[in-house]
Image 1 (tube, one colour):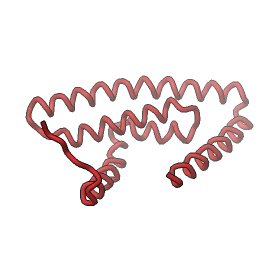
Image 2 (cartoon, helix red, strand yellow):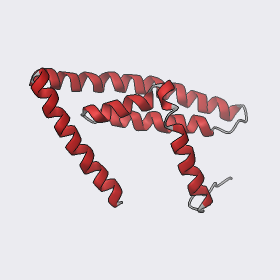
Image 3 (cartoon, rainbow, N blue to C red):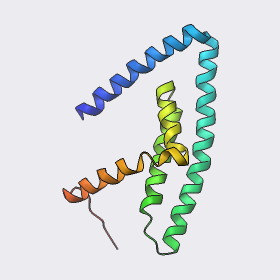
Image 4 (tube, rainbow, N blue to C red):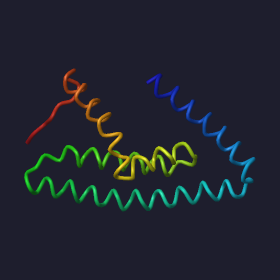
Length: 129
């Protein structure tokens, strides 16, 4: 929990520094306009990718294929959409990387390894009805 708190504080400080630098370079109005535009475009892209990912997950389930990769795609798109909705340049960059299909592949191994460790430690259970 402490790592998450420190990470959030570090992210906020970096975002403030980037806002100051971009504001000095582009001006306040253009900086604010850029933040709003990146958020709107990002949310639209996240919505489109999210709908496609959910349909892919449903298709996998209906064909009897385990939806593991599709679930991770859906999770990454959701997380990327949240980051895009938060005002800031750093969060927008990371959010775009999670939403775009060819860069999302960079995050998948991290999620898979994290889940494997949780399964090995007995911290994750699968419940079947």
